[in-house]
Length: 596
Image (tube, rainbow, N blue to C red; front, side):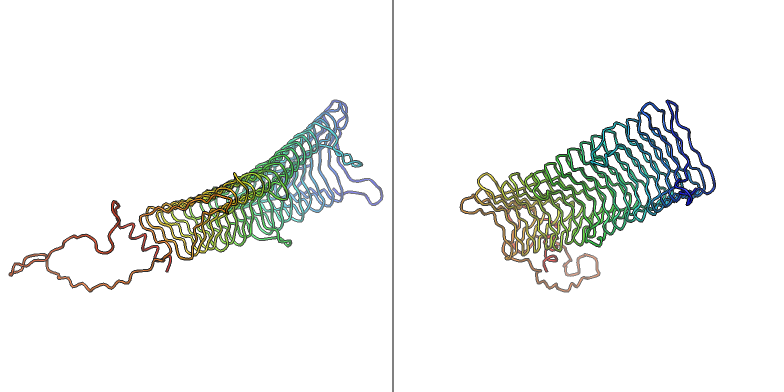
């Protein structure tokens, strides 16, 4: 079916309108090949205040194509609900150019649903939409209505969106937004296209849920749930085996009004990967933002492997609403090449920053990347990294900061094995308030090389510095600075407690001082073996060649016999009231290997 006749101004259409209180007629088209193109229309409607429900639209074919302004839609502007638009394509559904499928309401009646079932959904441009509301085009004012937007339900084997394709469900007024649910049994791919849910009024935006074994979002693809009014933004839920975001793709939940932001939840059974930037230099990112009084949404990611190469995960506040928290649960975390995980305030915001909590069962590594919670006028959030092993290197920054009158958050690094820091900065700072503490805990070794650990406050009396606590079996600081400083208030304390060895090189500094108007903190080191201002080097040992007899231990004719006698150890006496074990000797050997 094609659109406008060249000889007339009429468009090709198949339509049904509800009259009186009766339900409108349904439209069913069945054929192996169905094409709706060139502005052709298939639609049902309910327009009068007292009219009945709009009829349903059903396209049932093998290959279904909606192209070049063709559309299939059901709408209501009265009190009665709209009809359901159903497309069942046994082979494929193609929506291209400006083709569209929609269900909407501009009245008090609820919009109908969009229901799509096909093995292959191919969108090359075009749109699938649902909405509730009406905007006065002369004033851009939102006209009141109570009708709810309908749901969009898509089930496919494979789906691919490209060339600016759009799947959206929005509410402009008091009616609730509808949900978007996409289930793919094999793959879901979005390239340079949008999947969105929004509210401009008092109604809450609908949730977005996508499930597919293989999911790729590429080339500035955009998945968004946002609120610009009093209603809450929708949630975004992505479930996959593998999820890849590349070349400036963004997954976002945001609010710019009094409505709350929605939560972004990602669950992948194999991996989540963020990589690449777009042509403007923007990284692939997962974000939650507030530009109003509503709180930003939270971000939660659960996967065996989370990898960010230039990628970013952050929650922002640009106003009075607080930024959301970030939670990662992974078996392995890899941050490289300027990756960012942060909850922060931007511009002159007064909202609090959120917490950043990274829970990693295995290795958590960071190279040239940043993990932070930073606030402007609000309070800083806490940064916590708990992992089987922690490695930070090559310009990595772990930061807790506030520039306002509220306190900075704390930083906690907890490893089930070792913590290795090379060319790394771990800092809490407060310009006007108290600084947060820094705590490093590991059962084995904490090695700090060419790095900075500092808790700093620059405020007046009452703005105290945070404490720095380091608690391993063995700790080494080489060419590093560990400081807890203050301006006119009390500086923090530095406590190093090791059950084995503490080694501080001559080029390392431990400083808990304050300026003359302030009170200096203390530096306390508690360990059985302390080497302060020196360097451990391997002992020069030469071993004698043993000559053992193959005979059994037995007396010879002269009465002499072989023997083995256990004696005390030679060398430097061990400190009194303490024990020595083979494990402590091995730890000292490991330090020699680290430092030489």
